[in-house]
Amino acid sequence: MGRFVARRLVQAIPTFFGVLVLTFLLSRLSPSDPVQLMLAGNTEVTSEDREGLRRALGLDQPLPVQFFVWVWQLAHLDFGQSIYYHRPALQLILERIPNSLQISLAALVVTVAVGVPLGVVAALRRGRAEDHFIRVFSVAGHAIPQFWLGLIFVLTLAVQLRWFPIGSMNAVGVDCGLCWDRFVHLLGPVLVISIAGIANLPRILRTEVLEVISQDYVRTARSKGLGEPMVVAVHVLRNALIPVVTSFGTILLVFFSGSLIIERVFNWPGLGRLTFEAAVSKDYPVVQASVVISSVLLILSYLLRDIAYAWVDPRIKVR
Image (tube, rainbow, N blue to C red; front, side):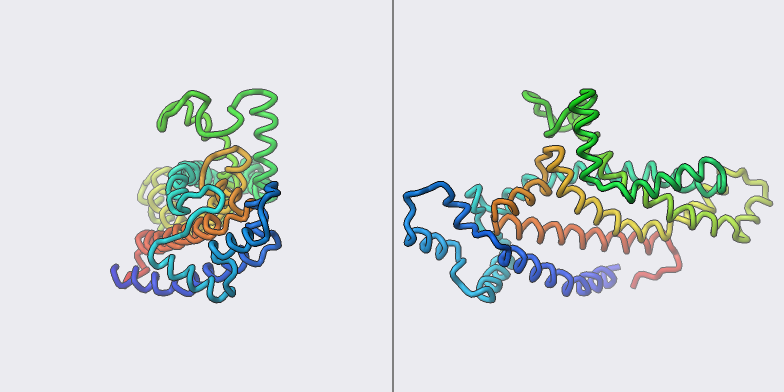
């Protein structure tokens, strides 16, 4: 297992380096100037002051020099100082990661708890009304943009009907981690983010269940007198879940990318909202640190997916 993990980590190095290059170039080559944004509205600042601030931020250096300085700082876990908040970028991100994980982990649980049963039902009720309904739902779930669904949720269920709170993590004056108020605030963003995953799982699982259910060992299990629920749960579902495990990497990618917009729509103080606001204000250190840390978390999630795949499928040897 140790060699398997080490090999996967080595294979992830080129991907991680590519993320570093793209993150640096996209943040530096965007049209707006962070110095202009920082000094916007200040009429007493001279051109010398602007150049001094640019030198202090290291923006007067050539791009290759800025890139290698930045990579060297990353190697020492120094993500720089936030231009907008005037605080260490790493400190800001570490404060927001737990908030984002609440949404992502809850959305993953909802996706599996709803998507897997829907896929099994669609396969067992093939060609019937349930199957057609689930297939239509899957197509609609892929077609509807998450940001649009989030806006509709806020406008209708939160603003007009007042069934859910408009945004944030808790009501005004309430500060709790595990309580009913936090659960109610989580419902909106979790449901909106999990829609894409719920729509994806039944399509994959339906095909796999239909393929597995016709195998000889399934017919043998039925001939031994096992009930249909036992056959489906023990003999069909475990083998049908093997390809589903490989799709978790895509589902996690949807969660990470979706939180960037959904946290903004629901005013959730997570890493996605912080990255969005930092990109708007041209806060280079925070944007770069957010993308790098999110990429590391995503790479680790792919590694966990590979380990889970090897555990689910005994034919895969981890060496």
